[in-house]
Length: 130
Length: 102
Length: 129
Image (cartoon, rainbow over all chains, first blue to last red; front, side):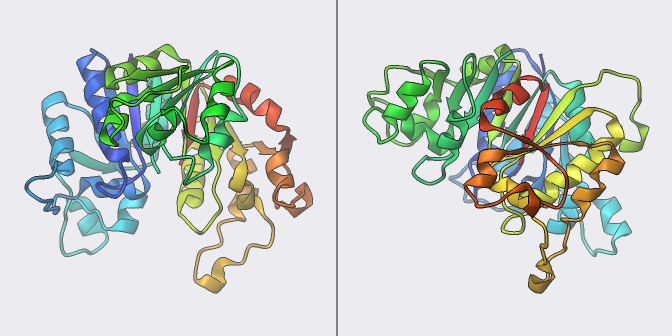
């Protein structure tokens, strides 16, 4: 099946992004396609490359980036939520006059339409939140 | 037509379990994940409500979330089936839709 | 694929947006509404369900400017322009909060809790925030 996942919460504060990641890994292991993981609300905070979690703890952001790299899962951060929370790529940096970008490898910033599109194209959409 | 209802909050913290159970029925399933896993354990104040719900709906709990919270060996409600993440994925694909109660 | 390149003419799915939270205490209400508005461009069959504290999102006379918040409640009245016309409110959720449809800023379809399952069973995709 073609699956899509929505992550509504940021890393560490809620288990949502962990549960989503474990679900995606299990889905891929079972041979399903995960067409997109869409990050909304505080979920966009999964996409900053500036985190420094303790060495003995899981690195949530790096885990997502590895997922994109190894399994080609499309990781999309909602642009409006990113603007509110300061997750910035090169394009947003120029467009909004910011002095830095901080997006992590493997993520891309795009519109809410990508979430709706995922709902249309996937066979199942699973949401992880608070 | 079947819905997989996912609950992730302890019923002692939020009323989500109660609010979900009163709107579902025959053919629906409930999967308890994250903090909600604790009400799969036998002997809580929510046991009766879950047993009643199990007459019409299938009940599942995500085992890693039980284990994480110290309940790996705990006696669960009779009607509760444990699944791992592979089982979670299987529940998603075998139901018609997923409703995460947030 | 960017939003404005979405190809029309594909399958139409039934989307249900479930709203269960008060506005303003968290951002879920406004961000859910933004998804509905953007999603309107995809010409899917959209319904919105307001249950539990979600009914407060439709309350008349919200004045959040006093806490420096944007008043997005009037946007619910504009949903019709986006062809989002199926707004369902659960009767019990209103009643247990001492509210009636007179307290709401849009015309809604009031349904009893016993019919929520039937509504959900018709859907392909359920979005909750």
